[in-house]
Image (cartoon, rainbow, N blue to C red; front, side, top):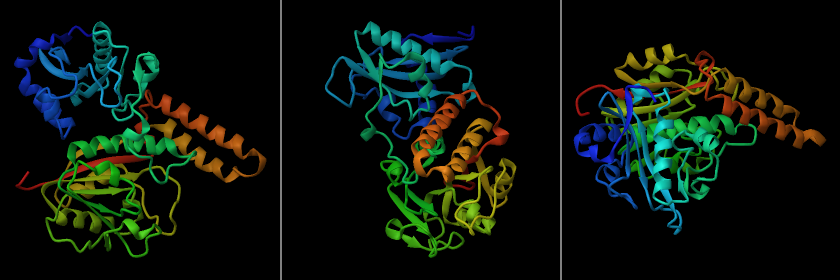
Amino acid sequence: MPAEAEIAHPSIRAKIRTQEERLLQLYFRNWENAYHGRLPGWRDASPVYMLWNGQLVGGIYLCDRNEFDKNRLWGQLHYFFVDPRFRGIGLHSLLFQEAVSRARSWGLEGVYINTDRYMLGEVYVRWGAVFWKRIPKSMVRPKHANMCHYNWLLYRIHDAVLMQYLERYASGTLVDIGCGDKPYGALTKGLVTTHIGVDHPATVHDRANIDIVASAYDTALLSGAADTVLCTAVLEHLERPQDAIREMHRILKPGGYVILSTPLFWHLHEEPRDFYRYTKHGLGYLFTKPGFEIVELQPLSGFVVTFAQEFCYFLQRFRRGPIGRLMAGLQFFIQWTAYVLNRWDRSYGFTWAYLLVARRSGSGS
């Protein structure tokens, strides 16, 4: 453990409440449950805190009950957070080690944790499955409608980051521009009050989930009608992206957020409506010009994931006849290997896509 870092005794909670509230609000919309100690199975010793030179920089809450079955010998971990300034230096490992030690001292056989949701699958690998139990699939985010055996890698990474950003920034009325089949409708439940899907008349997707048939350049919504705009893998298909971004700005309330993803390295798709690819510098320019403030701009991979995923798309053309099953197995192996290696890959100049959060400037935030 770094000399500056220490695991704090839970009794310190009264002294760091303001810091705890700030970090919880940064990561979680329903932060009050943890802040006020209302989680099932909460104890006085539930909070696991990490201090850095006396300041709170990370935490997790261990409870001696879980919300998924009646087995009282299994607890649950909740609300993992690390101050963004201290991410990437291994603090999450120290927090989880302390949580494991504390759970064992309570006599628990194991704890539930949704490792996918917190992008902490490596914890499951590092400590094995003896003490950890995945939250049942029915309890976690639904599978993306377009996820297949040859492309689950990109959706697993993209959707995990998207879920984090939705929990932090989505609220009120959400307008989903280029919604298609509205694959992220389930992710927004409980986060927003209304999810309005907008797509153009010539969409290749089923119109069943589209609420407004309109162009991204003119959504027919009133100015300031939205608290949040969601736009995933759409900007590359717009011949006038700057006009679509101006429309996002118009329909957002001051202080509202755009949550958007778009590719940098990707093959041609949905032709002929495939026009552009975007660097982080291009996205920054396009969004700051009409009056947005960039809040998050995250590359979703390095070279390994980009190459592996594109190679699997390439292999798909050979997946027929007697070698079909063999090819499917190879595609899965390639993606799983890339998913594991992605933990150490920092070659972000080769990312296949970016996920951006931009805030509309102005009063009312």
